Length: 141
Image (cartoon, rainbow, N blue to C red; front, top):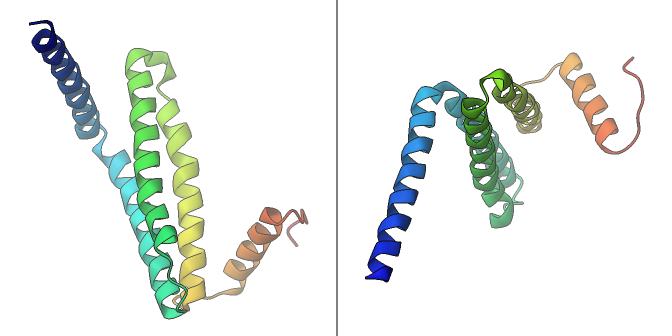
């Protein structure tokens, strides 16, 4: 009897949690779509580049799936915090903006490496980002 009661409470708790997450996803669908769209586009461009250069690795391909799950989970957590604390309504935008910006930079870099876009300004921006990532902090000239 105790096991059945424990399973009932466990399944009820899991159901309530999943219902709450689904409700958040429905209410904030555009934020979740934005994350999924940029991560999928970045992953597809990265996989395309790897296939063209014959450098495809399954581990790197799964990185896109991991990032999508991690970013959507982070957004869901922040939205739950916002729901509990209405004065923290800026948190989702604070989390979403850097994710989108970094993914768009990665998309532009992958598109440039595939030869889909080019331009001196884009080259300069990506070179400065690469210098910053490698620890060479130079000013933009």
